[in-house]
Amino acid sequence: MGLMIPDGRKEWGKIMDSTVLVVEDNELNMKLIQHLLTVGKYQILKAGSAEEGIELARANRPSLILMDIQLPGMDGLDATRVIKSDPSMRKIPVVALTSFAMAGDEQKAMEAGCEGYITKPISTRTFLQELSVFIEA
Ligand code: MN
Image 1 (cartoon, rainbow, N blue to C red):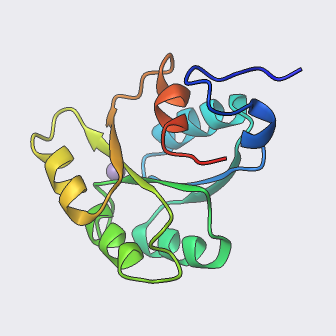
Image 2: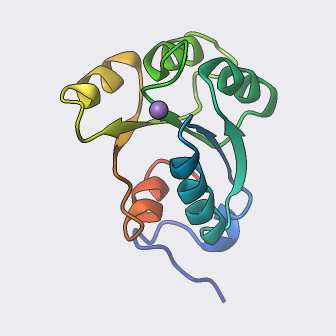
């Protein structure tokens, strides 16, 4: 039996093969995202910096990258530009994690090449649905 996700395009069974790379330096946010992705049956790769995220993206080709904008050292915008300028990674959707408090982050994220954004604080109720839009079965 296949449990359909809200947009009705695919079944959970297919999503189970999907790996999401999370680039996030805030441990509490990372724990929350990890919990939600686990509930959604995603495989998870975690990075605490842009540099580590790029490395993991290149080595593992995840189905999706969740990219925090504010990171120590290189920020999420520059990391996205690196990913989108690399032929081996540019097709991986990058969804920015933008902060409600930082006006203009959404615009900057889209200009840097992100396919979309999710605004923090993360809504535990809608997060998986928001994410599913960006993942192809
Ligand atoms: Mn951050």
